[in-house]
Image (cartoon, rainbow over all chains, first blue to last red; front, side):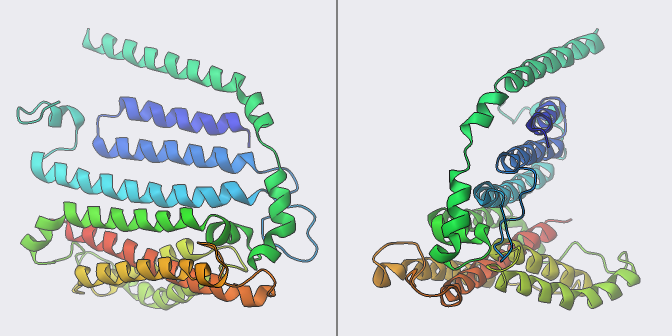
Length: 112
Length: 236
């Protein structure tokens, strides 16, 4: 996969982050940016003809295992960040009755 | 008027993103020259004799970069604590009633959940224990086990879960992970690596990997189980 395409995924996430008026959609946009970064890193160590980094007898060359190991960290941290932000979204909905950015920020008791 | 301003804003945004995209495309050649394959060659030649793991991703996670993995598991613990702390008052209010409505869940789904649940649990344990031989490991297998436990709520919606006990067990397992990772200080003189010397054969060194994979798998499964339960209890 061309690394330019992975960066396009990141830009799609940025677009969603800056235009969405729903808080949950903003959380999804952060997830999209993160998956673009994961694709970029997996693409770095990858090359044509390399097999998976699990050693066996008749193996000529493997792809780089280091980016894959780093991306496990990213996936775990991303899932925890998503869980925390969605829990905050639930709290915002219970407290203000809406998950729209404008309706929440337009209230008097919210300091923007 | 309002509509045109909005259109103009979106146009400016797309232009800015396009500028970033062009800059990235121009700097792409440098990114390719930054990368070299010395690390890949090293892991291919020395990985098995250094760590005893055929799966090189597990070798990096549990031996070369174990310090990172410890804090990765710690971040999961911190996030679980945060989710529980944010949703604390609601749990006390609603006396732990779950959102799942038994009468809205199809019977076919419940029946198939009963069939699939032991298979998912077995597959999760398989992925955890074979983390050093096949794709998988503690984090991935723990997620599968946690998903199997989530299906359990569909089978029995009246199931009660004691979150405090789960979190306590999770903290104890996290301490155990740190203890197992620190045993190498006694046997080899360095922190956070395999407690067998590289002079042992690969099967002996795999004992350490299996122990650590099982501990991390249980920790991740318990952590995600807590997050699921907190979300299910949030429903009103």
